[in-house]
Image 1 (cartoon, rainbow over the protein chains, first blue to last red):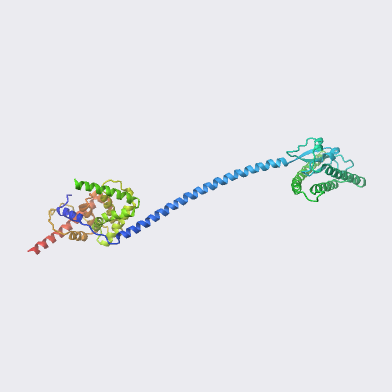
Image 2: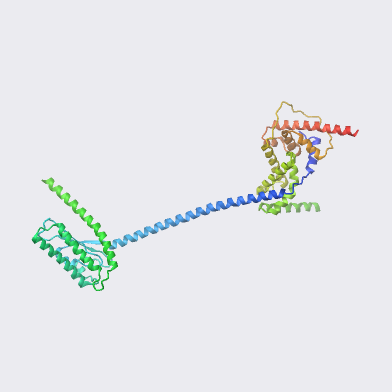
Amino acid sequence: MAPYKYEEEFKSKLEKRSLQPSVNAWEKLSNRLDKEEKQTSKKLYWWLGVAASLVGVALIATQFFNTETGVKIDDETIEIVTQQEELQLEKIDDATIPEAVENNDEPVNVKPSINTPKIKKLKPAILVEVPKTAIAKVDSIDEIKTITPIQPKALLSFEEQKIQTVVAQIKILNETQEVTEADIDALLKQAQRDIQLSKLINSETGVVDANSLLQDVEAELDQTFRMRVFEAIKDSYVTVKTAVAQRNE
Amino acid sequence: MKPFLKVIQLHKNENQLIKRAIKNNREAQHVLFELYAPKMLSVCRYYVKDLQHAESVMLDGFFKVFTNLSNFKNQGSFEGWIRKIMIRQAISFLRQQKKLEFSVDDMGIHDNSENNINTNIEVSQIQELIDELPEGYKIVFVMYAIEGYKHQEIAELLNISLGTSKSQLFKARKMLQDKILKINNTTSYGAI
């Protein structure tokens, strides 16, 4: 439709018109724009905070995983140390027992392995546990002899004395009554305690060696575990032996 | 040559103002507001009867202008861009007031022979005549006759059909012609 004449007049006159806003119009608009700017910056800071938190979490996670690998390394080192401190089992003949006892760092655990319940002849294979250290590796009894302890002559003689005492006691018991396994164990344990005690306390100064005490405790823990293992193996062997014997009957 | 150079200078100045206003420079925004607010208030007044409400619509429009200034890509005039925002704001205001109603009747659309009416009406009277029209008639008439929108554009903006837009314009023209004739007759009788 074509514009009418009066419509063009309306348009022309209205286009020329301008109306002045109120005095505080700009102030209202300005305040509104300020508010909007603050909200926008708050949102920006919020997003920045979220981003910073994510970065922080990522850093902490990275640190955490790094320390975990560090722990693993420590475990490995601990394993290496325990291997070094592991006791080496040696079967030593009865005749060489006095010379077999060597090494002041670890206590000696002597456990007899007895074939018959009634003991007339004390000729078992006695297991002597000798600690394996990086410094002293014992292959034979002769080598044990050559290792020089801190107080060589006195300690050797004390231990030798103790062993001889135990042997004598067993012989006496054997003459008077039947010697049981438990009796022998008890005697050996007592002798062992005496030997350990002599090692811990320095006879000259009367002071207890803390390191020796600690090592003694640690060895005792190991020995307790080993004893349990040996006991379990022995019991199983006896059970199997009994079962086979009964079957054969 | 001098007026031409002045226009170029003004345009250059305006571009600088716009650039600063985009960076939320309040002074630049104030200058732009002072430059265009009077014109834009008049535009809003075409659609909104009450001047206070018209000013409120104008301020809403400028708020949108300054918060979306980065979207102005120098495509066309800056004034034309602001004007479009003002018209949309006015339509939105009328919708909120639930004043946008387009009556549908069986009135036929035909050419009106009274298209050569002479008027000597003051602008204030023109505004009064427009204000007396029903909202539907008024908005279509203003958008078509004053703003220069085509029926297709009006239909899209108001979400009405092409036929409704044409019928609304026809009705608006009919009413205005009757009123103008009355004014002319009154004037001529008065002159006697």
